[in-house]
Image (cartoon, rainbow, N blue to C red; front, side, top):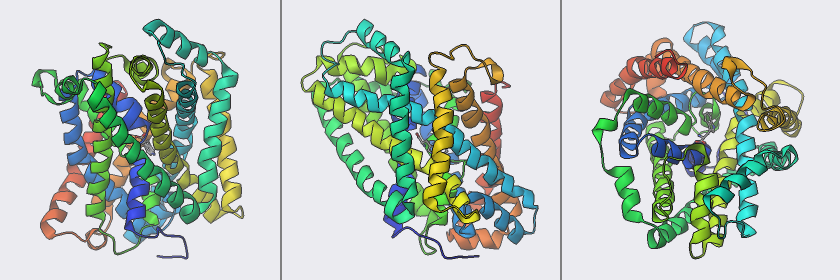
Amino acid sequence: MSQARSHWSNRWTFMLATAGSAIGLGNIWKFPYMTGVNGGSAFVLVFLACIAIVGIPLMMCEIMLGRRAQRNPIDGMHALAQEAGSSRHWKWVGVMGLFAGILILAFYSVIAGWILHYVVEAARGSFIGMDGERAASAFQQFLASPVELALWHTMFIGMTLGVVARGVNAGLEQANKILMPSLFAILLVLLGYSMSVGDFHAALHFMFTPDFSKVTPTAVLSALGHAFFSLSLGMGAVMVYGSYLQRHVSIARTSIYIALADTLVGLLVGIAIFALVFANHLEPGAGPGLIFQTLPIAFGRMPMGTIMGVLFFVLVAFAAWTSAISLVEPAVAWITENSRLNRKQSAWLIGIADWLLGIAVLLSFNLWQDIRLLFGLGIFDTLDKLTTTIMLPLGGLCMAVFAGWYMKTSHVAEELDISPLAYRAWRFTIRYISPLAIVAIFLYLTGLL
Ligand code: TRP
């Protein structure tokens, strides 16, 4: 089952790229505020357990599917189903993932646009002397301006598809090779800074002193859902990255490293943010506005706040960029492999589609504020909910069920190449634990549980 197509230069670039996909707004924007809202340490502990028990086995599963198929997710699922002698309808898993990626990028790009705007604001010194009221009104004013939002959204879509258009080696690999090490370096600088001027002790206490009374079912399920989103699972992004992976690389080991890197970055960013928040007696449970409204106040009051503020938002922008690339790679790969359009033209096509969708998303913060779509939600929330609470868990469920129940065990074992005991544990997880966990998140997130 192979055809001439690009591959990563080595296993490091695969790991960087997949870690790049995993580490994104989910880690830096969502994880800290979810921790803040869900009472801190208890949430962190449950999240770690979810990554280990459900996240890593599923990541192995998705990489395995991609590498075995050596194709984009749609044709890949089709080919694997054929090989397993089961229904060709499994290809719909790929189709759903492809659309999920396009829909996610539409709102991801709008938020990433806010980040780009905040890089500039930080650099202009706008945070200096900022108080709560000014931070909130600056953020609201920005959201009220469709033109400004559109400008930054356009830029981010251009950056993303610009990389994807260049292909696996000259685009994806090259971008990740530059952006990911820069991201780690900036993170270390920020951490050092936050350690010296922030309240490190309070941050550690908040994030790591377990209080089991706070482990509510809600905290468990939202941690599980987030483990999923944070590792980029269920959509085919990891599958398509796996399809560019060479045969000899160990899937188990790389999955563990990627999950560790993803988790570590989430935790370290969380510590850095909360140390600054606590040192300034600000509110850790501020919700989605945490990095846009709370953090600027902290930077504005601290020594070297301007440069550190710029570095922080550049870090988030890099993280978002390398994730966004993986959201559209399945679609671009599929079009390129199935039509007469070349990669550049396919990238343009997806870029235009996502640009248009993103415009609708950003208008939902101002002019189209009152438009209601699914579940009585606005455009932004509809896309977010539809993808992260329905399409991704469903995609992950199908992949686990397919790999666990339909594929030939010998094929799976050959691809994973782990010890018999590890294989048995993995297989048990993927057949029983992951599907059950996913169904639970699904029911919870759609409000049925
Ligand atoms: N994991 C990324 C984040 O944490 C988001 C992301 C990128 C993603 N690609 C994905 C989520 C595919 C689900 C599926 O921000």
